[in-house]
Amino acid sequence: MDEGGTPLLPDSLIYHIFLSLGPADVLAAGLVCRQWQAVSRDEFLWREQFYRYYQVARDVPRHPAATSWYEEFRRLYDTVPCVEVQTLKEHTDQVLHLSFSHSGYQFASCSKDCTVKIWSNDLTISLLHSADMRPYNWSYTQFSQFNQDDSLLLASGVFLGPHNSSSGEIAVISLDNFALLSRVRNKPYDVFGCWLTETSLISGNLHRIGDITSCSVLWLNNAFQVRAGVPPAAAPSLAWCPPAVSHPQDVESENVNVVKRLFKIQNLNASTIRTVMVADCSRFDSPDLLLDAGAAPGRVFDLGSDSEGEAVGPGSGPAPARTKEGLRRFLDGLLDGRAQPQLSEHALETKVAELLAQGRTKPPEHSMADAHKLLIFTTGCLTYSPHQIGIKQILPHQMTTAGPVLGEGRGSDAFFDALDHVIDVHGHIIGMGLSPDNRYLYVNSRAWPSGSVVADPMQPPPIAEEIDLLVFDLKTMREVKRALRAHRAYTPNDECFFIFLDVSRDFVASGAEDRHGYIWDRHYNICLAKLRHQDVVNSVVFSPQEQELLLTASDDATIKAWRSPRTVRIHQAARPRPHPFLSWFAGQKR
Image (tube, rainbow, N blue to C red; front, top):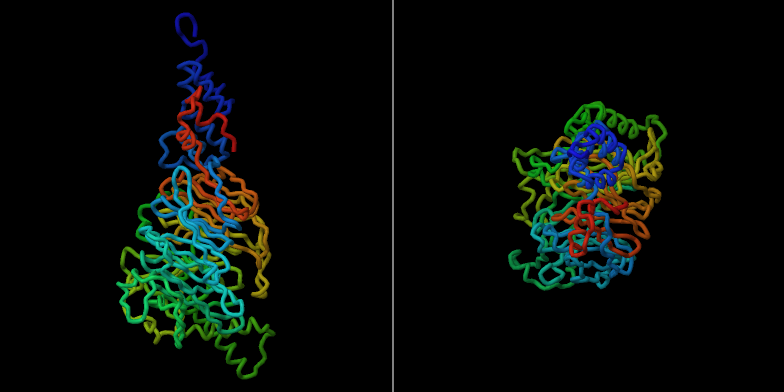
């Protein structure tokens, strides 16, 4: 300022000078005087700072909920949970999975030490209960999920049966007194299981039909063990007892929890159904983030379509007439002894299975009801590695546990159920997660080489070390956004394991085999933080009530809690700060 109070430098010149500074320097310069402070908050200045600092493509618009470029810059820098605040070391082996209660007050962890631990999520996290599953012949625990009202916990693990044959089992634990209420057999073990309603859950079973052909049956089960002659209403008061002996008939569970069969789906080429989850379609019309706004339409995945992007998968319903006729001619020629192209035993089995299933597959049912749910799972049609996502609509009448027990639907056992949609990712799927509004499905995939062909179902193509994070809109069945690629995995196809990801309102996070967890912004598609562990990060989970809190679980046998710089600063508010205006930015290095 001159002696009369007139600025010596015009705002335009100060603006151009500030353009050459970094964000922290701009904030510091804004403390010099009122003129510099006003220029340091200029919207065009912070727009340039934003795109330059975060390296966002210039054609990506500002988040629709943002009020200013300055506040948007601050949101991405100050609200990402990247500050380690606590390390939990109560597990004695690899920690495989984490899940939060819907209230956010509790979370559960599963581990190779064969325990399910339940934690209290206070400012300082503490252990509430540890359930040891080894007395029930479990090898380890691998997955958990709270029911909608947070009264029950579903815990899934690997069960060691006769002759050391391993399948899966699901246990239901009361969160009132931590009592074990029931157990349901689950095969294969990486079906994991999931809640359909507050008191009913989905399990799986696998039936071998041939060497590489099978069928997966998905069952609806009561959460409470029901004894013969005891009405379901009385079941919650029953104390835990050893599993009941299997019935002589083809019962899908060791216990009598099974209520009804939901779906029976054919598996070809050594594939199986795994990783089941449920999406609530009634929440689609209030999305937390419209990822496809202004974007070009992506590939469409719809079995009812004749488009180029159509995916053909297991149980896909009646095939086109030319395909059906071709298979019939093939089988007729084989039976008549006419010359056929040289086929391996596996290829021959697959062709015969496809033909036999054509007349025994029920087409999808369609409901006019507004509110329904989608059953989502990994599957395949070419090889044993899960390379497709199957989607099946669950109709309202299928969600009730009322009606005949076990015998229901026996007359239709000869039929397979067709899938409503199939998404083929052309790679090995190693993780899936739903956005909070249930509209978007995020998928971790390790891609096959471009143009690769599966000649032998037992020899899938090699998979990439880079993990692609794909996004699919479950309302339109379209792929949206470009793939995120910042994390890596190294195990081959036959040793590949699930890496659990999670999605909050603004962020998506995933673990990786490179000893880090990663956080991306959902709107801008940029990596915001890397969270370090000493070994593979298997699972990440945001608090459903506070996305500025993230938990990570690792093979290093620890669980780490991460909070945003903003919340850490709030919790440490008693400590004096010389420059509170700068405190949200200064000294924060990722």
